Image (cartoon, rainbow, N blue to C red; front, side):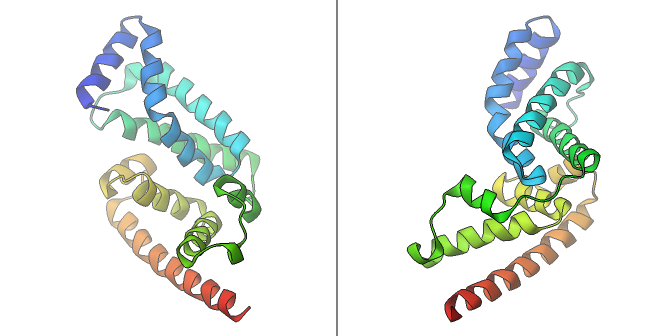
Length: 185
């Protein structure tokens, strides 16, 4: 969404046209949900957290300064709400079977190598610690810059770069090993 349009919608909402907020929700709901589900790993919880995050954003809209983009500000709310949910409920990571349900349920034997790697990638991402999973999701799936991820997570840019590097190495090694094991079987 164009920044000028976002600012116009925000002005409209702050002037009393609360229905205009729906345009922001419609534009960002899929990305916010993706971030939620990657962090908390449960579709029902992700839907609740996502909805609560939009409500929080609506109520805090007057505090939005515009220093960063609306998306970055919103994803910070989504991120914090998701992390709080995990800490408060002590939710365990998503079982791998649930990830398969989200992306399809074909067995590895029925897929080509590229599809197998994609599924392995989703499984490995789901097994990452919550912070690394979030950083990988924001960077690779949602195309955010290191600076934006820093704003969303509160982690320094240099730390994000290090975590991206280490996580990529770890994921590559894990994919290689799992593919090797699949080949042996």
